[in-house]
Length: 341
Ligand code: KG4
Ligand code: ZN
Image (cartoon, rainbow, N blue to C red):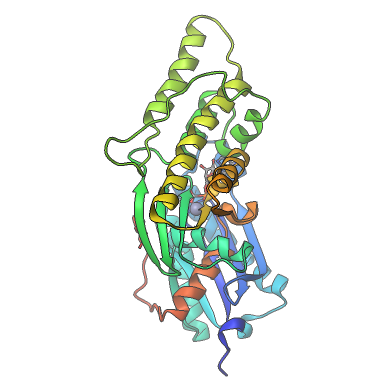
């Protein structure tokens, strides 16, 4: 029996880093279930994600997570039209667990298989929260591994116009959090600590990349923060964590917002989206919305649960890929360095 596009139901599977996730999404935008098994507590002990442990935990949990996703959606495998899985980028051993699982299911159930780029998944999270969102728009993708400024020309057509020259935005948050003893994962902890601080207390640099107005650099900012902490330690002074995190966060947010809004203005695009783990940052959401409003640009971002890694966004991106004719087979592999576009 053929399902029409609006009712096309996709099981999404995500295992690229430290979340084992499965979700059922109808018509690319309606989430019927969204299960995320986070490994954060285990990795916290080591101060970051340990790839071998991540793979083992995905292996242990993936069947249960998929079973829960089907149960929450009130479905069984018979109701699923296609299986979408993250094929990259990410940790190779972690990705392989999801890819092997999806291939086995597609083979055993005789269902279509769609490999999905994780970054396209983050972007697609916006379609879940904003049912009317359509390309073209400019999307800032900010996660633990990526900082990309992309023009989304169509659901599956992306032009990368800017990227980081060094650390990703989320990575910078994680490193600063570790340096001030807030622990892992740093982003949400910095976000919280910064609420009580003065963003103008310390003048941290806003890095520029010569002749590349849409590219990002965070290494100078990271060094400046570490120097500030070291200097305070040498002088026997205590660091004001609230002021330091607020000032650091404001420098990152300025860099991200300035380039994104300039890009949309210069290209004459009337909508800006943000995506990825860092897009749940309260200051980034607030400042991006304010800067867009001044330029009469629409600003959208996913609900927080769809900003960080999840499988609903993979099912959504998988839906558009499926409609575009993407069909993978048993040769599908994990692609740890997969690029956008
Ligand atoms: O998208 P994501 O879950 O995984 C990757 O694909 O990398 O992003 C995780 C990153 C981490 O670096 C985490 O610290 C950061 O997103 N993050 C945040 C916040 N929530 C998560 N950064 C700043 N503020 C937040 N509220
Ligand atoms: Zn991610």
